[in-house]
Length: 228
Image (tube, rainbow, N blue to C red; front, side, top):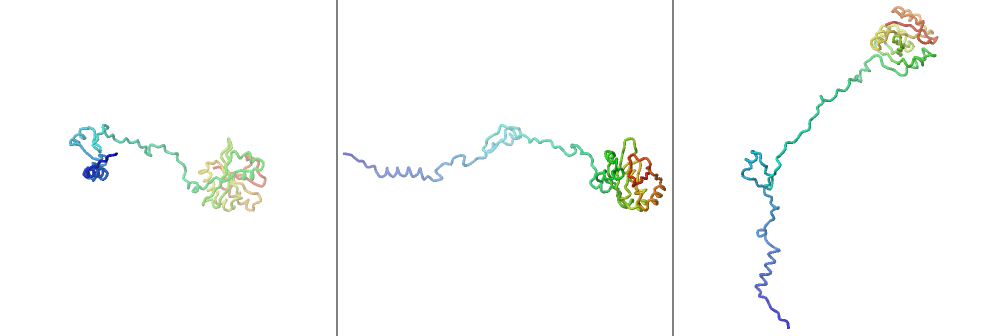
């Protein structure tokens, strides 16, 4: 036979309340972990320690052994330490110039010197002269042969004869100041009706017919040269 014993009711109640208090404890009775409430504590002599150079006090009352260090600044390079770029002409300087470099010089060279124009090409550059003083634009080519003066050749066919006669002085000035030439040679067509008048005007200002050109000239043209 088994014998059963019955515990007193008061003991069972006490046992039940014991477990109930464990699972349903009130906030006042349960202690809160320390890391839920951070404490910022500073020692009473923090002001004196900071002035004396001791370790500073950080949050949670922990003293750091590393003293604060100043932020190191990198040296700044200013614009005046940079190299100055070389000077270049303004974009509008070419537009203001009455003399501009034109296309290939071979076309005019082969027109005046049909048999030897290619020989003069390495020493030539094509230009276009346009100025209020010279009237209509002139097409020309600057030829600088070794041992010869730098010469500007102008095709009178590209301008009216009356403009050429009135602007010859301006052409001489432009060839001297802008192109640094020592001579100006104007090519005239022999079939022009105003050839006599133009020759007279050019000779009046010191022009002479070129009898010994550096290259063989097309028989359809006559060259008149002026020294600058």
